[in-house]
Length: 378
Image (tube, rainbow, N blue to C red; front, side, top):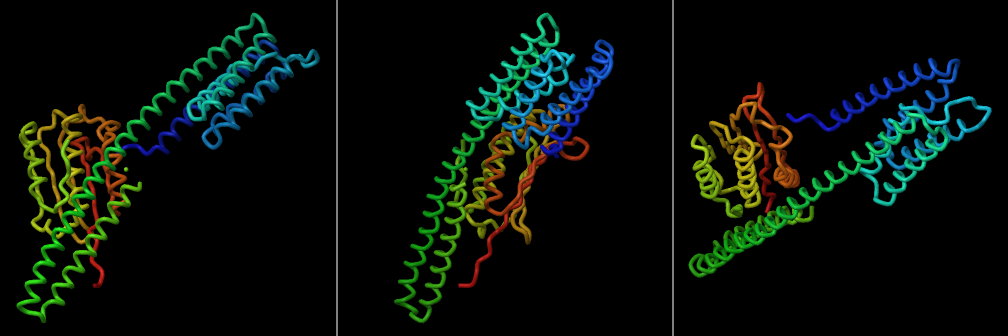
């Protein structure tokens, strides 16, 4: 399974903390060796504060950056005092912490705030250059600021592209759902029309059975309302069109088309699809379609693909498994943006979707469970 984001963040913060500690230790050693005495204490304390703010940046991006820049500016001002006998510029450890704070702000904050924080960082560097001309420390701080700004801008651009891609997927999914809503309404209304016509015939021949026919029409209308409500809920939240009618032919045709590009593909489906709601059937189709598309894109060396659709007491289970070797399995890309819309759709229907590598790197699996709503009393 993919590594959870919180673990990745924890690991990155741990690595960054170790880097901060190493930078502070080097700074303390350099000051103690060159300036002597306790000259390293103020700079070390200021560096610890700024680096601590950098590690806590995710809780409050703006104020951690402002506080870090304020500590750096105060350190410069204290160093300028004739009686301080301290270095007139922040050390490399503080510059590293400021670079992280500036880069984080540029990446996530609104343009005005991000620009203000980046400009404030530049002013602090200018003050360092004034206070310590000819020193290498301001040059290190300037390089760290530029690196943080560049990294923040690059990540901001990447995040924007990622959000745009996800938004495009959601819009496409909502358009697909709108088409399915039309098909679902047509499907149910056609059935109700046929039942009402049959009820007229029954009324002429066997009037005592009219109530039974009316009950069937009522049940069909209730099913239509439930189906439309579920699809409308999906629309409020997200190049083949998924079939709205609960028929297995569409899924078989989809797998058959895929089989032209991957010879060893097997499909297993139950025989009771006729009682599945249309929105469940169409979602099953779309999940299989997206999973097979990902196999073609990211696992071209897969020797076999198994598509299994099952029905149990919990609902409908869909699993698509390929045996692509580990060298062709890319956990960060195999899911694709298409599964983002699928996961939202499945969760809105009350189901769950998981995608990830199989044990021992023997392939990749996409597994989904969709509940079948039960009819209430009529």
